Image 1 (tube, rainbow, N blue to C red):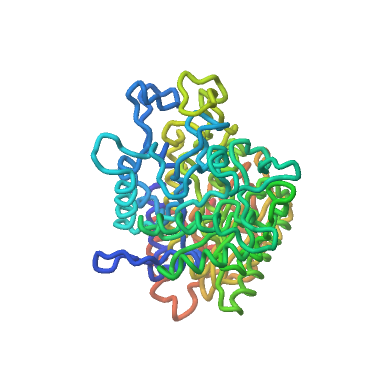
Image 2: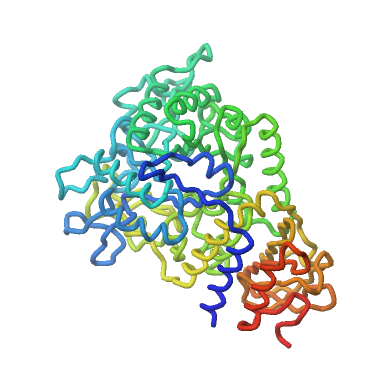
Length: 549
């Protein structure tokens, strides 16, 4: 019955929220549409690390031991997982850095993905050595295979250079008063680029490196760029680079890793450009502050964040410069939601992104509840490919430092919700973008409730933010009539109707998602007939009828 209910849910969603889908393949020729997709909040993004994406850890000790015949992820075996991503509704891949990694003062046994040592080459670690193709040709083929499945590919652009790179070309890097290179925060394996000269002009040598990187990834078929710590470079640097990239491709997407929550430079004396100025410089999108969501103990900050996003969107819309945001609830820099609040919280993040006017963003492994716990974490390594002989990892976070196992968790039920939520996302963009958002009083600060209402349809979302205790609340639904249909797309407990109030008794961390449809309008006659026919074969009832009775 549960499978039937899910199937019917998808059908009903399709009836109400179907909208023109993006299809970038035109007679077999790829036409980049990444910007258009993103700016309409239709991107469903999966961040992947090619080095681990389809790695083969035969002895299941979490580390891929190449010397023992185990195979790390590479551009060739990565293709085997693309059908899986397409089936899950992923339409955009964020490739974590694919450039060579530093080996001196390194972090981890394979080197941090963000310790870039060369802007003009691809990481030889990502090469399939069993064929005669170059790693460049393999990468180009991988992007092409993504495009065949209507999946866009955005490449990560690292913000700093490795210590190896500093040793080779120290003039490219900033120094302090003592002449020492600037180290960003606790990133001991990298140094900060000198992007500006003393007179404020751009450092042509550093700018040239980034132009070469753009040239390389565009030749590989890239659809866009995610700029790591974009705040660490001046607005003029980005304005010029974005303009340069779009001479070849107007749809080339630029996403800034920047947020209103971040206001400090990487190191004292280093440049810092606020997210708003980056948007003015030409970036299409930025990171919302959703990574703080786990700490919000009432809906006020949630409302404030969505209000800010809408304000920025409208401001730039008047300038004819549309902008959009990433739903950055759990990036590779954030601990796994499984560790934060177990399966309920992981599920909550999935459904939140499906029901907000944001671009969904996930890290590979989240879809099955990976806790990113590694048996080898911070132990002395049996084998290293850098000068670090420890398996360095960030606790509970995606490993970007070693030849790790393929990401994945033991929770197939989460995978079902992931697929369902992404289906809803792809079909409900119009109501999320154009509908009226309102937060509803629940009588309990632990229960968040919001709805998007457009014409005759409403998406209602209710969350119990308390991950430990059951929560009770009440929602007034006076805007709806007794003939309206309330169809649960995601629900564990059954709310009870009492006059015009929805009485809630929610499990810890529970998420409810409902589709409410008016059936008393001529325009909805055909749809209401479909729903009424559905109701006769399922336990779903009109909104004012208690399902328990």
